[in-house]
Image 1 (tube, rainbow, N blue to C red):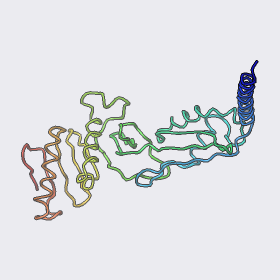
Image 2: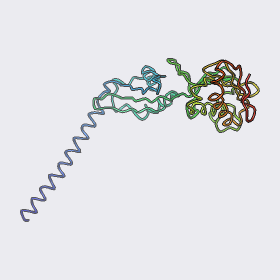
Image 3: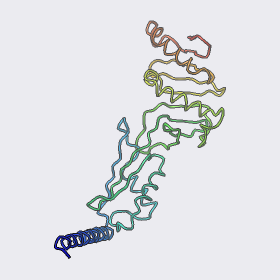
Image 4: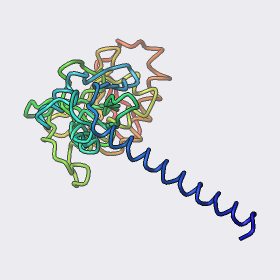
Length: 257
């Protein structure tokens, strides 16, 4: 064998040997890490846009303890199924997303994104809860009350598929709430939706004592357009407290008392 060929063979042997050594070291390090204990738990809860925190770190730890029967701190890392921990946490209706991982210092890190309520419902049975932007039901927080649009009155009980049901009044309430929330002018003006027994919708403004009568849930886009036009062109001249009611239920007009 020529010297050049022999040198190449030695280099190949050394290269393969190096790979085997590195693989062995990686496997050994992984086995050592799996045998290590969780040094602690670090929880990060991202606040909502208004800085509200509906859940606390203690709530997360209690939920883990109840679901698994033990705390994560001090447990062997190989016994901690981070995917299962994420799944357990995401079953909480106040949690939109949970990301769980173990860092280089053997700390179990949990990053929580809260579900954001956009509408508070107090239905005809007195049940009190939030809906998020997708219509998912959320319980009230035991720590904080979020300032969102409130809907009250003759609202039927929540069902998971209410958005798919035809002529479901909760669907109308939720849709109106979304229309108000997505309109800068209306979201700054309206604080409450009330549904009468006959199905008429009433809106309550933040400023003034008026009842804004939307009437039956039909021609809603037209009615809200007329309301904004009235507030911008008619109300400033007469004053916010002049009228007791603003009725939008008549087609093509706004009737005030």
